[in-house]
Length: 485
Image (tube, rainbow, N blue to C red):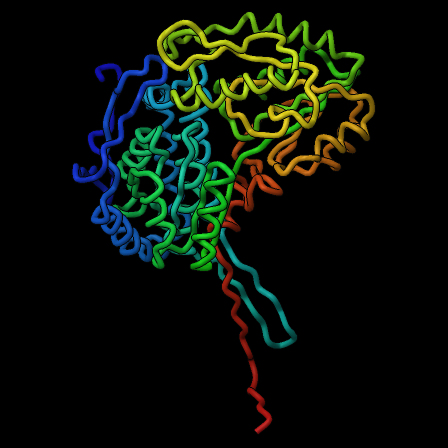
């Protein structure tokens, strides 16, 4: 493609691009047109072995470096990502179909933030001293070893950095397997890290589907697995990792509630609902897709929401004026359309949208259902597309109970002018990442993750350090050692 700087091979292993055409071909399809824009090959067993061996060889020396030196390299990579933001954003748009208007401010920039943040933390990874009378103990924070990251297709650049940055800061090596749907972006992350001075082997990217992920997760030389994906995939990966007693982080799906009270600022509440349902064409795991609106404001909310949605600019995602792009694939389009049909069939009121956009690619109108009940399929199952379910409620107690009546617990939000109620409600939410008068903010300084079936562990912030390192405790006796015989 002349309009982007493509990676030059399928894999990035041991500091260089690697190709092995014996691997299964995987076509990269541009969601805005349905055209094949690249082809990569799944990693063969030989490529997987090369990735593991080179990572294991490089990791020990990397962990032995002072944290400041590791951090300096990550900081350089962050600067380079920002300098190349335009090209990386175009690649992200081609990989995912998300509008350039969005990718240029939310993807490579977020990845750079993670590299900079964890690069800054690398020098602070210390243990503690514990005085025990005349004896004492101390702890050392040490790397886990070899980490495997498995990415989702909605944020390929960001996820590659959200997993890679803390892993590398703590002294680990990482092998990252992107989603087979969006394989290109992580290769550029690896290329930039290497160019910034990261020693060869420490951040390898290999392509493939479930069998490649399974080979990595099941390998006894792997110490940690971090997955972003669906709950069914999470169950399989978690079980496979558990067989080897590996460290695990799981960032899985959600069906998150957004509570809007009568006293909320209407315009802000509508903005929150739009960001929580239609950003990235609804393909965000933390989306607030169950929008509970107190009855007094319901019709005003629906009217203003419908009006605001008319302002969505649907078109070529590479055009900076476009604000709403296609779904990532034909398969995802069909899944979302089946949920829309189910919503209509089960009696929800279609307020706006619901149809495919008449143009090439996998475009679907922003869709809003009202009069949705808790037992409807569209209120229970994660859709991962631009479909909002609006539910009525009367009281705070009722809304909170219904909000928590889900197997998921990733995110939750509340809009109200009553800040006492806002803090009371978020304290009651059964969710890992919550928002007050906002939605879907994800600064790297704040931990991100879920509860219940939405996952275990946390990404970002200082909390991520706990998931990419381990403590060694050392007891020091200063006097003679006694024994019973």
